Image (cartoon, rainbow, N blue to C red; front, side, top):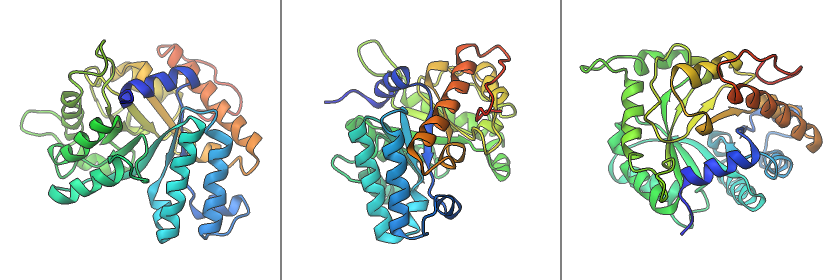
Length: 300
């Protein structure tokens, strides 16, 4: 049986650096690459990104919605993206944000974490708002298969704060209650030395300063979307690591457009990813400092 996701992710980040590149084939990027907004253009875009990046970056994160909008043909492309990413040595996170109850959640678990499912990447994102307990079929299936789950805690959309920063009877925000519930699922860690668990949380980079989260007991990875084009910068990443108490080794910043807009040339895609990674390295190697980021960095 393969190692658990938390251990595999930490090993990949140490080997290739702490960067996740989203594969978000929305119409504007397809047009920028000179491609039609159809299944053929989708495939050329997505597999072109995989071919350029999967041998270099630690993690790729295809956004399921942009594949689903093309129907069955788009889902088939997503399956090929996951297979090609694995073949090239990159871990994959399917950004599907699924969340439901009962037998429906069990079906999602089989689709996104079940053994042999072509839609199952190394991890999947999930929404906790039916209740974190409702995600247990997915958590069980993922742990059994050596996969991971990233649960939404604090997202970057302005509307999210009204729910996620609301306080319950015990004084905790909803976001903190989600983090604590995921931490409880990771309590025993993985491996003989109690390494990081397979379950993480999603914290939007642009909300890191204001969320007031305590991530010090999570014992799992923190997926941090919002780097670059979405407005997240070095100061936000420092705030997440410093104020929130996240373990730097388990922080996974994510960028998409800042890298993908450099395509379709593979060399330019790799150069853009390397610039983003260099900027992340500066911050995470000295999270208390105020580094001068390199020109053109994705975190400026």
